[in-house]
Length: 476
Image 1 (cartoon, rainbow, N blue to C red):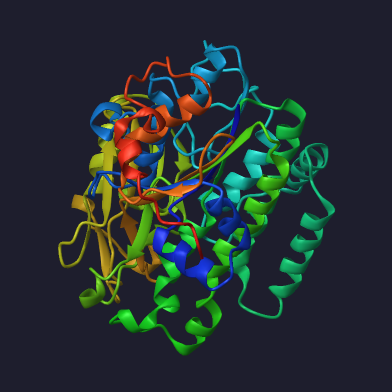
Image 2: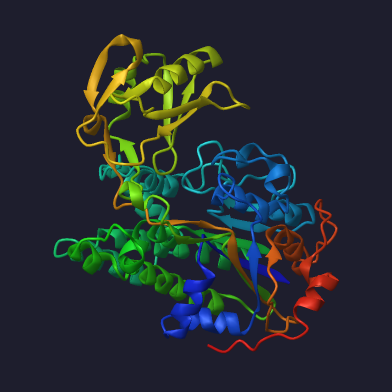
């Protein structure tokens, strides 16, 4: 049996039920009604409740206490085999399309591997194959200033690559309509869904060509919408109300994200044959973020210009700058001493009230790399930043700018895990399933129960039988 896994980051069981009941998600409803449908429990709490932690658990079966991948890019250094490595070791091929915080075992992997757009420590496979695509996507995803560093040559290579790898006419039309609509109204946020279309075109083309035993397809757009637009969707539960203009512009953003992914579910159902299991996994989900409302809501800030920030902090050692996600970035120095000195200078930046401005720490496994970002979470109106003992001062808003709206969604340990496959009776499992059960369950579907991970498959345990003994029918 083949497995096609849709990795839709952080979709929420409650919102899924709501939007299906309202008739917005016909393809999700069709998939659920033909699935063994479960809710997973990540069994973690903040600060260990992050997607770049939970997706490593999905792919390896290891809890965070064992894999210890705490940050994005940690996954590339993990030596534990993933699902796709087990497939390769058994003689099969895999197609990994954007899975988060992932890596491969070169001695076992066979097929195509494209890392997530925030990865800076992992190479694609075959080497260089996805470079025209990743160069452009990373420029847009990692930078939020509205000034992505995309040259005409990069765009030309990107278009040529996409034409050779599945670009569809309907995606071109949707892209042109999006660009035209941005001239008339505030809909730039919809660009993320154009990226989803492009990534599906690429995924489907390679899937049809290679017919892999395992294929994973990761999307993050709706998770991003939930983080920033829950406030506009349900303003009544928030102390800090959105403006009338923001409510009108963004109240349906989250639902639009689910509807966009519903369209892709329909295409996945059409793509699969009768020997293919369709799996939906979200790893975790979100809930409204109400914990910062008495502070005016949580705001995330990112530097305007990395050279300006480092010069202000007094850092002149040779380095390589690599943006990651949100306000996070990495600085690669020539040695650990230079990295330590830079981390101390960034860490010494203070607001005039004594509040630290930055976190900046050398990576334990690679001490020449500094992991850094802005710590400030509320707008410091008119504040000045002090640069350590040098006496330099600069206005905070000259160094940093706010990312989009106030953050209004936060992580929740519940996730969706649906399996639609030949021989699987559609049922709804009422008891939550540990997230660590996903990996061995997928190995069972693939006929690879003898993989490195020894935890029992959900499909073969007495726990599963008890959980589905009296299932509720899947009726919208």
